[in-house]
Image (tube, rainbow, N blue to C red; front, side):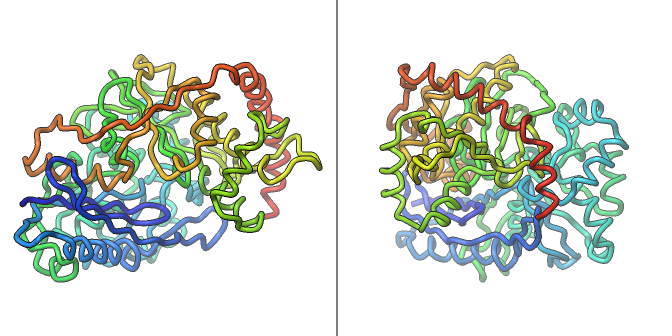
Length: 492
């Protein structure tokens, strides 16, 4: 019996699965964790103490569940990203890993590099404007703010490529993650942007580029001792978690869209042809030679988790019942969900949350429903920009832990007008990792799709006019309050 191991390193937890080549899941294991927020605008993790330790723990748990006589045919790891892990020559991190767009420390470096290379030329070469999502400015930040750490660095990684190095000793970066390491990657060439990379990286070498399903090496004896995965097991490159999750639910053809309900919301749409918009992220896809359009918010589930905490910590089911009892539109309550700044489409780390229309008759249920609606208005704003591409959305698949909230999923369908397809298997990126491993080692054909749709969430037409009206108000909140919240941001 041949088995596949898929492991994903997420923002709030890491999760692994043990899967048969037909997509049947034999075992799962999950480890919860918290990221470090040491200063305003910073988001970090310990790559060894968290990521590698959890890969080892999950791998051992999955191996314990493997049937006698079975064989691990391949494994693949995805992770949050794009992230920056700077390591010395012994693969020891020289500082904590800097996380993706929720870490906004490099604002000055974004501005400086944009001035140096030119905004239009960056968009042309890299496919997107520099933002807090970009890795290049974060490398520049370490060079400027922590020169001793930068001087000790010999190689740089993302979350998945760091784990690949620990497993195999190989120094690689998958094309998709590389395409988010702006401005280091020339997206239309599917290659490194050598001159700009040289300016930013200095003496740091560029890793070998591979596609996410490519087998890049095998588990070493040292890694086998720590993980329990047999030495010699093939390891596929993997990629950023959101894209592995999109792959897991069959978002692979032009017009396919993934809506990922997590700590943040992330959208991935597969493109027919290359397209850019300075308010969005154009990236390579998971499969060779493909492109995707992406966007991500700075809060989503993290907002409702915070709201749950500050309103007394009531059980989730109770909160959902209270939100469901409130009519659509939350009786005139509108939330701008920028409690951690915002990524797409405003790219403003100093943006702040706004609650408009609050009265004494509003209660906790109103706040929860209005938060879900505010997040969904933001997704509608992003999708209107997606419509400018020549690959209109023809199929939308919802994934992630937020699907537990029927209030949220229905509000999003009502506000955007999309019918969402919800998959039967909602494990997430680790399931996509297992499929990438299966494809990489040749156990299944490259076009194999394990996804099965369980149900649909169509929009309720009776709410269309109400939400269209409220959306107009929501769109005005950010420009109307921007200067005020920027001043308030100076206080902390």
